[in-house]
Length: 303
Ligand code: HEM
Image (tube, rainbow, N blue to C red; front, side):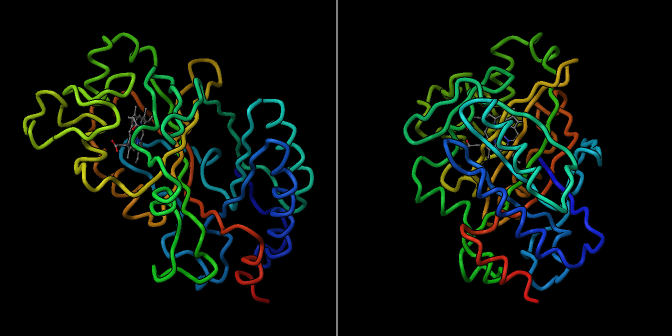
């Protein structure tokens, strides 16, 4: 859920941020994972803002609904069961005096599991997602976590940029296509195997298929990650959503230490992908997950 500061004095948010952080830390236990991320407007002191943090721009084809986009903060709550998530989220909202919920969306991960160190789940289009993510903590940190010397404010080292996109999917239209057709749009088989026969956990040679005979040039994975030796520096962790009345799709979410090299570079390459006609992005935002602990609050809002 995204929250906005509701106080009279939005230029002095230190106490409100500290309260929200406390309520999130209190929820982060007993099998519940909860974390806070900050939106760009919280940084009244521009010098402390993470260098690349801004309001998420609209990409070609997006129809961003302001009531489902952006926010001063994002609180993400996850747990193995729905009730635990709901109760923890309610506690956060109750304790977070000075904040009001701007938007929220419930997600789930079908067939959620870990294989070879990778978190996998089946998305609403019947494809397994997660294979392109790193399989080790070290690689994960390398892609997702801000380092010193990157030009970010000191307090932000150890944090991560989080991008959320609520992508409505035309499942009825999608389901009319053959499985083979769907696989050519994604660029992998439903179970993750590559279209040229390369096993799931090995790298295909796109160079050996310059005209896209095996893996079409406008397929999702081929555009997202054309260079198989330098994979995009981001870690994806998405959830399915279903709000009824055909409003279902993916809560796409990813983490990166560099927004321009991570999400933004891939998003640019995906313009014109074959999957575009099945998708409508209606919400989401850019946020920054602060490093663990709470010393960042003092560093960030020096009074
Ligand atoms: C509704 C939207 C989307 C769907 C259904 C979708 C689906 C998939 C699937 C099935 C895969 C292959 C399995 C895997 O590696 O996880 C994949 C890979 C990937 N996707 Fe997406 N995706 C979506 C949106 C996005 C967006 C918005 C981005 C980033 C801007 C993105 C970036 C990537 C990347 C980087 C890979 C891994 C490529 C690789 O290393 O092989 N995806 N996606």
